[in-house]
Image (cartoon, rainbow, N blue to C red):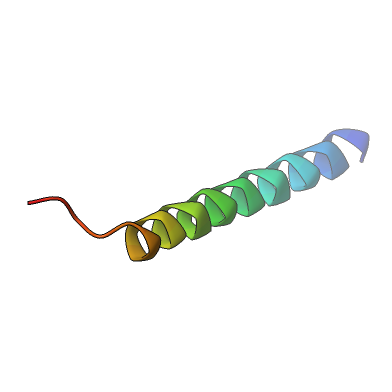
Length: 36
């Protein structure tokens, strides 16, 4: 039971981390105009 709980927490943390990274990436792309 403990292992399952830890796995669930890890999975949730990973998903939240990915979403946070994506949000930062999108914000950076929209804030800074692409240099061509």
